[in-house]
Length: 341
Image (cartoon, rainbow, N blue to C red; front, top):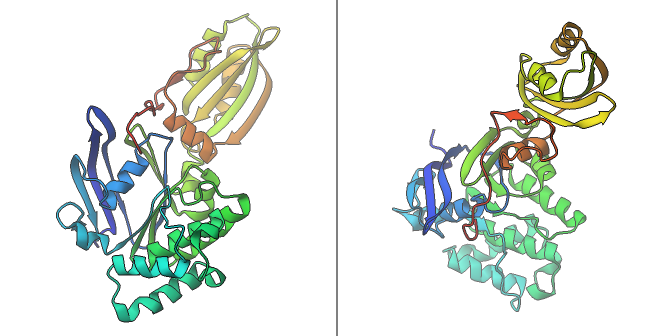
């Protein structure tokens, strides 16, 4: 079955700056996908290429099997797009703006009023239809932006930061609207709000520095490991470096950070496991074998926020460590300077 969105080895450069560095993914019919990454990661650039606003430097981008470079007009017929900075004519009435948008989208004249009525109803704009856009709140303006995106009944919606600048009540309203639209359309949505992804999306794609870092259900990305916060004291007056080496060698450890000495002879460590590995038994055995006193132990699950930070922050290590941390899974810098990435 043809993917609704197919991106293969996409690259986009602005002069010497590489905004997108060879990312690949498919989005199937009916999926609501959260597209995550820090500022400058390449999210908006990818979306602009996908919607035909920018040409890729190289790679393949297809909408329902249609190449967006070779046949951009046909590809755009299947996409509704809400840019990050929602461009609206604020001196136009909502109905006039939607009629204009329908005309620009090629909606047949005999179907325009039906298309407007449907978009207005689905986006909760019934009592705003005759008002000037400039009179509306930010939340209602976002609704108008969504209404223009669905006027031509596209199969795919591409939403770039759809809840930016909204108050908490407006965020919930737009989130519920997106969830409702997601029951019948494929949606690719970029956002900085991680709880929004967990509440709205069936899948999350994380990119940083123009590269894909993770792809999967939000729940699985949020539980890709368990964390142990442990405080130990060495009966043999072993150094923090020596104890860190012992802990790092435990089977199932993917990452370890060493904090400063917390009290006389006591050292604090944070261990992250691979997958669902439970490190507690191996930790206890090592403590007994090497004469370490286990002063405290706390276990918690990795959150989506922790996964996001781990994948998108530069591997600079904690500046206050008394021992350098070892992490083979840390990813590259997210400091791309590409415009509008």
